Length: 300
Image (cartoon, rainbow, N blue to C red; front, side, top):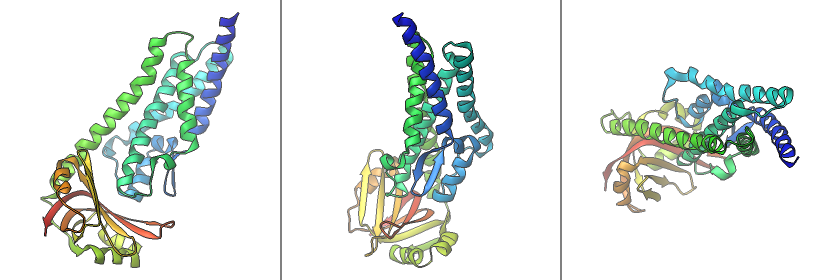
């Protein structure tokens, strides 16, 4: 009797989990400053439109954009799981497990990508960016996998762990290969503008839209005094700020981390990189101008 009650509870709680996943699929999982992003945005490809528009981060495989449609399987498989439980009175099985696994894998990608955006805007903090729908979707996915079968614990562990590991490895592999290739090419690219950091900041503060139109995605050399730097074996950032708190921030990869570590606050340096544009913080009333693929051009 106890086993029957436990089985009934698992079936109907998995039904609720599947419903929650469907609802959360269309709600914001993360919010990048004032930009909400749902799981649906990944399925439609709008994820990359938002990342490119707001942070100049483009889809690394634009020719494969149609593959994003696979994430429509999350609500589709969840619906199948609901129908199986509701009409056949049985466990969600492989359909529920796959739906849950895809949610977990996508959740890892959203969390890692959002964490990377801190390099472009320090106001983006992972804990604040993750929205309630993200947590509900992840919890529901875990529970849906656990309740997809009455036993079969090895399968449950597999569907819980595999998407986490695969998504983490795939994200970092793509990031490292893409960034390494672009950063290595920075030294050979022709410089479009050479400018003092304070002058650049002033231009963006004075005319944000015009400056973004002029400098975004351009190869630039910016010279100025280092106000702050953060360096580790994984990578580094270097900032040049004005008296109001607005600043230029350069993102370096781990290959250049040791070079950045040798620099101190107060040093004057020239940095070459690709301008990603600026973001204005309404809270701090400051302008942040970001550069990617950065390399130290010279040190004085």
